[in-house]
Image (cartoon, rainbow, N blue to C red):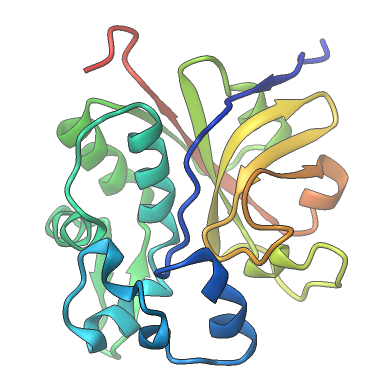
Length: 212
């Protein structure tokens, strides 16, 4: 059965850096993220901590968009990061890198902290995940960061998270926290294009029917 069109309007867009306008300069020109006058917008005060984490917080940025859309109160992103670390949703490695976002600890934390039901889908077609979007459900999926340039060839799949907020029989609408305009906010791409970037996994976020 072909799924009808469903699109959530007015889901707020946030970049994982300070300002949407600065993503191009940070990504393409390797500008210092702290040159962005709004780098402290997400609650960071230590420049080194911000430089280390901002490029890794696509998942928390997606969560923040969903929480604000549903008017669920939450701390700034820097404090969300502290909470996510305490719950094992990110793990610092001995080599200085980071493992994360780790879906199942993230799901437990988000349910406990915000009352959202998170269904982890470690192996699922994008069409199946998109079909789960309904009036109370959004989705986060793993794609290659090269999705910001959908017209270009991409060497990999996965490694980056985006927020799906709409779907029709042929494709999806999404916010990309590291996107560059015009493929930044409220982007529409057909499934056939998304398949080049999609890693085959994701999760749905569902608000309780009674809200909070």
